[in-house]
Length: 107
Image 1 (cartoon, rainbow, N blue to C red):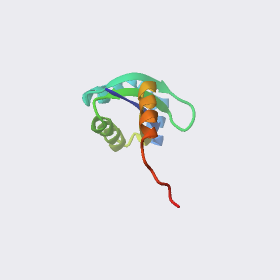
Image 2 (cartoon, rainbow, N blue to C red):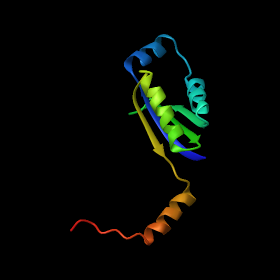
Image 3 (cartoon, rainbow, N blue to C red):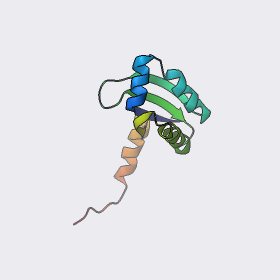
Image 4 (cartoon, one colour):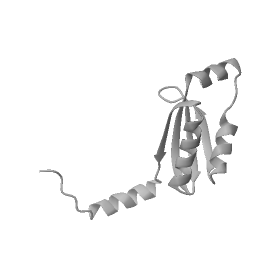
């Protein structure tokens, strides 16, 4: 399965609810990811632009997009970003293939 970086920021109402009633959202994240055939590999609260950062595996990009759409539609998040990841060996393979790619930049 392919790996994805998932980053989320909570909407004001969701953040307010978690301050009033602290809760670990890892189980909720795991449940929605597994419902689409994925596996949650790591879950972290974060400081900075995003409140939560996760690494997950999905069988395909449609499953990953479905999680993004379902969580986004809930209204609990103000921002959700999904990034497809490659292993180091996949990155090396892409570099080798790029050598033979023909691309002409704008003149």
